[in-house]
Image 1 (spheres, rainbow, N blue to C red):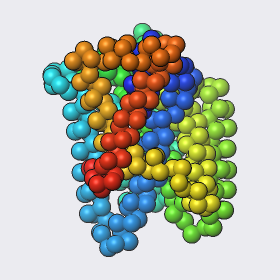
Image 2: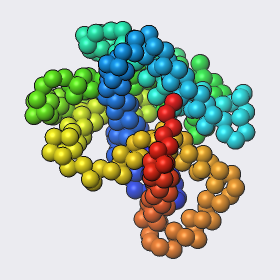
Image 3: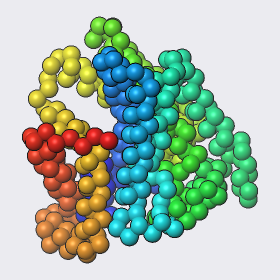
Image 4: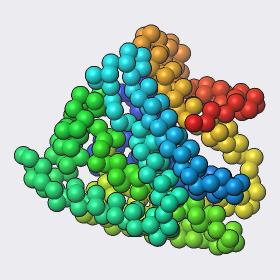
Length: 341
């Protein structure tokens, strides 16, 4: 996200490093659902580890609720920085969506069965599909999936008026109704985490993950015939397809790193991952500060623009951001400074 959120020039961005305009998907659209997915995976290991140490379930749940609240508060801080005009502050967004998904998923993992996870996941995907296609929107009718006529847009206009994404102001890509299938994205990760935590042999785990990935990718593609793949309203087909790709990536990394033992190449990702939330927040605040100081444009034009074509120079600026915060993460890792909410 540091890479795709910080191009040198927003008018010169490679297609795969930007979100799809509406229907369809790009590499960038894979990042957020994959983050929710891996959050579900790690949740399974975290909760199991705490309970194995004798921590009672109620304490684990209390910590999870506290963490969700803190993530949400950090999201509000980022939305308000630096002026904090509360009358217009964005209520939902990337971090608030993560917080909500984490809260719901944590409770179902701690107090529900694996069957309950499946039931909730299926209900969220099917229920959202039915809501978006059957519930009529005033002036547009049912099943309208355009940017202005979909149900998610309509509900956001009622509940989030004045508190939405600044670039749209009339709807929010991390809005209210579309959070339902986003929860399902994290629950897919929960199921994958349960596979990895099982007593099966590594080969069997890998095979199960690759098989599940194939089924999900195929299912998402078939679903898209009737329900377009769309990240902005997080359609059920989008959630399923992205979960398939995330499972495929996880299976490959599990086989290469954990089973075969080829770990050296993944160290930069491990270092970033140990302070993932901190790096995301710091990079966002840094970019906002540069913009407020009027330094981002001159820095790009002076240092990066002369180096290559506009799109390549724009990517170089983004890569410089990744290297900057990768270096900060490396220093923090060396000093064992880990910011965990």
